[in-house]
Image 1: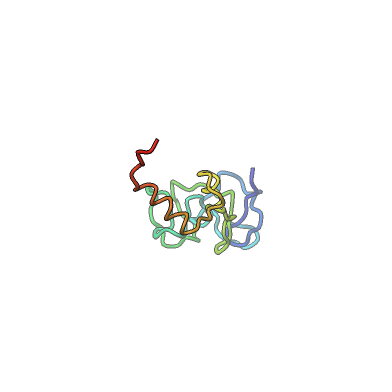
Image 2: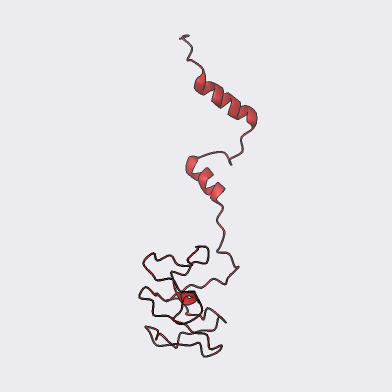
Length: 123
């Protein structure tokens, strides 16, 4: 099980009884925990900040709310911090078996020409 941390200060909130009370607060910074920022569905990249389409919109993401779709976030990434990056180009090259993904323009022209050239009738 992952460590439970406060969305505001990052302090452990593992000692909070679960399920979280609607008015649960962090003992270190007094931030309210049953809020959008502490929820798994919170997604600041969306206009409505929530991945759950059935959830009601809340104007204050840091304040306690009565959302029926609240799920406590166990993995927390600080705002502005990026998730570990993945080299998608390398994954594609591995998937399609290309030679490092490096092709010269002449190789591309040759392949394109081969596609549209009629096969020769020579045996």
